[in-house]
Length: 250
Image (cartoon, rainbow, N blue to C red):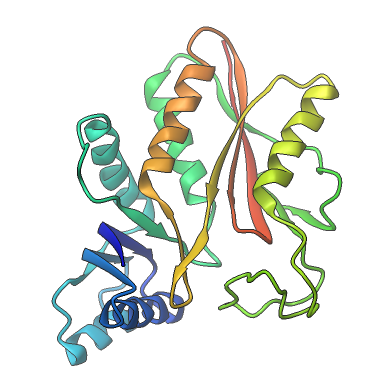
């Protein structure tokens, strides 16, 4: 049985409603439990809202908010409690497959608030070697994938890949560590990486721990405390990822 305090589900549409149903099934099977589940969507009439009215859920709450405002409040509170929350149940975040790079955006906003007189920019990352599919977004985020095929959205990335029917011999977190080292060998002073690894926890639901986001923000603070720094930030699963470089000037 995995125990959590708060689980945050990003989005209340088709993906979010699926995750809420699966979390409920995991709870009934004594595989995973949470004191509360917060589903964040700006639409008060989203699919989760309709399903909650019919299901009578008691520990699932719809938070009507845009994601930026929600995470500024939720992660800000978590950062303020860091170090004083020993013994508390961990919180976790369930990302949406199609969401922006929300965790990077929060860390960037934190940097701007922390250093209002310094230049804060997003810099491009040179394509890492060894990752077959890559595309750079308009905002500079480097999207990467080991899959050169279309994956089912509910794939839990098992040891045996359902697409190739062979062993899954790849994993994005160590590949991002290697990409950071590769950039350093080419002369780039790249700190980190800060990696938020979304992993399957139970019944088809992947998540990463909230404390990892707070630790990532703290790493950025240390890396740029005394001088300019670039920090690689990635939200990844075993197979896919979004990578962004946060640059803090003097």
